[in-house]
Image 1 (cartoon, rainbow, N blue to C red):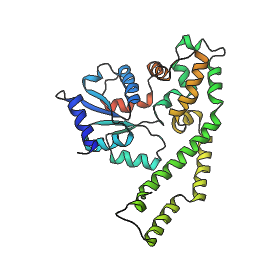
Image 2: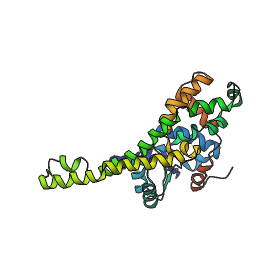
Image 3: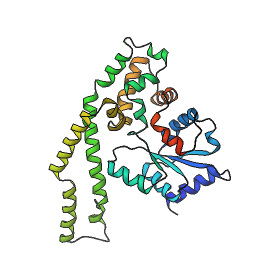
Image 4: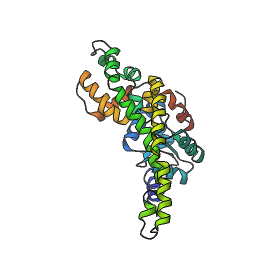
Length: 273
């Protein structure tokens, strides 16, 4: 039995049993914590029909959903290209793609973050919202450049892996001769064409720089790292020390319910509040 099959069996045995509840899969334990808060706020009693659990990683969510078409799953968009998004949404109908880079994307836009802060915490900032916005946007140029590279280079890596990098030349049972090796090396070289890769970086640079700040925060910036390395540090400085996990949890409790998650709630058949 494969590890995926074992996970599915474990979920059915341990969480579903004879209850007949449906399964909502997310990637990791942090996602379970955040979505449980959002679900509790969105629809009281959702646990009568659903069980929320994690698969461990994005690829596992997708594999499990293919085997269990009645389950629902959520994965981060991350740096998936539009073509990758379309492919997965076409082939895995029970997959919901988070409309942002990742869950932390709901916690990094200064405007949305300001709305999530309780009034008592807002009052600690001498110049109110301006103080928060200035602090968050100060490191933005470097993070936007990081976003460009993240979105340009990672798809190249996935393309290389799909072409057998490096397994196709290192399998001891399929050792290539020179002609086969040359053909494989050429296919990899075609993908990582230096001029084409640089051109893609430059194109993305123009796109991301020209996009509205809201889109930069929601789609492009690597929000998981940005939250940890920028937002959490800023809030510690401005509002006092807290652990990253506790602050993240508290923000999900006070964040206005994201409108762009409504399609997921509707897909789950949750009652409108």
